[in-house]
Image (cartoon, rainbow, N blue to C red; front, top):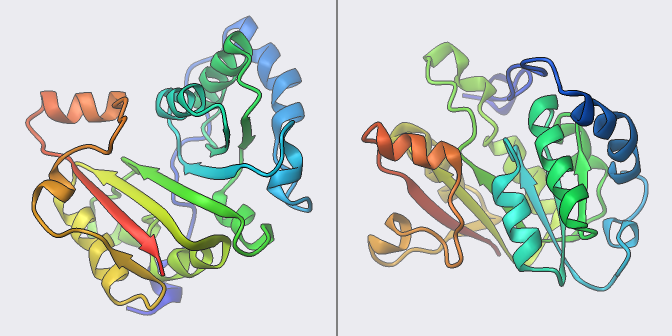
Length: 226
């Protein structure tokens, strides 16, 4: 399968769910523009405190994991990408209530953001429970592809870590196949527990909780930029 055929169309589904509450709508109108990443400016310069590590979470859902990481690592700058308006509103509410000044966001397709970021600007990337697009004809819409890995390799520093979690076995295998043929990444695992156990300091996500309730076993991959 060629890159062109493998990566076609947006990797996300709906842009909006149920109607936003008044407070959420206000945050989308006022706080979102203030926190939206400007791709023309180095990420480090868009936070109150520069010279820190910068982490990126792609597809943060309701923002629970991102908010937990921003809360636990106030010395790290975190960028969250999520086109789903309702999920963005939930994260903005947490940022506003907890005064998480180390968070910035991108509310469009991440594949529009990555080419505009400077080289080697990210210290960590999270892709957690992305849409698996399970039907064979849909798999070209999966976020992780040869093309996306190339884009991530350009913006990740040597030694930076990509963390991918999913409860869909064939998506985990899909990701590993692309990582193993990439010259830019290496899967760091030596024993089964290295992908069976959650990451250190893992707060969990609602998608993970649902998967476990339904009997699916998550995998937690750690992939390093060489």
